[in-house]
Image (cartoon, rainbow, N blue to C red; front, top):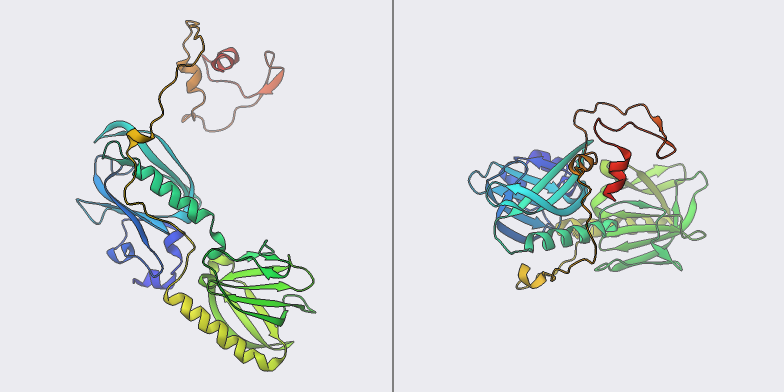
Length: 345
């Protein structure tokens, strides 16, 4: 593992990286290769270039088959939306493609992947299903404060989660007087909740824990959990009653933490089918709509173009009163009227 990867082992599902070194293309511990598809074109950045798309439980990897140094690593944590639209591919012409809209470091990136194998929906179904599984399993990977994780003083378990210990008499030292509560130690996280208020709680995945140590506080020796910078760099202190249990609790949580890191669980559940159905099997017969299309002999092309982003527009125009709508609206581009836009509907 490279120095940058070792310094921040959490980047795999959070960042977008271009043309990374070979060691960053390797799977980290806990990362699983779910599917690998050849003949996938990076239509946005390398149109016409064939490559391999690897779908893992943390990210998408696209690697050019002609030059391995040309590659992409797209973490699901940076993905905003995934949809299917038509793209212009040099290899296939106009065809259905997978559009992946992302946001990273304040910038938006769009990736377009086209399957050069005809009549195969595998690219669409696999990526969308895995991203959905990632997006709905955040408690495995993200610190959560005051979440819906406790019901009737019991931990609501995640899939594949197991409770190893439940310890009462744990004081949360975030307030001056402290709050008495209960610890839950599982195979993926540490959860504390106040005994008098279940919604006053914290769920700390092991993947977000930086250090676990015993330190002196104004309440006496305390168990201190430092979290990663990505989770807010929290310093969480807990006092254990009786004090003799502190060393035992520290040893147990440290052992669970070390065990987790030997084989992390990221919570992305999946099952692989032996063969995916062909696109012909998924098609629905076209039905004729019972409507009449009236040709107004007016060009609707310019009206539709008003829905697209105006590349020459630098700032919003000053609104003016429109008598047709009875509202103040931004003036339209020259040659386009409100009546034309209304007729599109």
